[in-house]
Image (cartoon, rainbow, N blue to C red; front, side):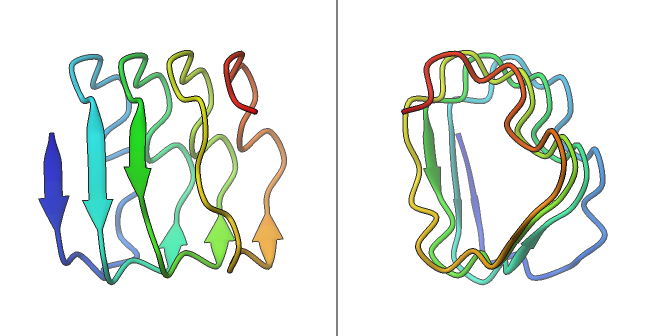
Length: 88
């Protein structure tokens, strides 16, 4: 599990391939850069209440992710959720 008040936009690929990561709670993050959580196959719980932009492949191949709140999102890049087979 990972929790923080991260607000940096320099998160490209920071968690890419973290197969043991199960949950993320980032209260201040507004942008999820490209491939930040790509291939995090155990990720089931995501709390990003202020997110407005989702980068390319940001959550790609997260096969355990079932839902996430995108109510504030104004921009979703290509393939951001590609391979998220359980996402409703």
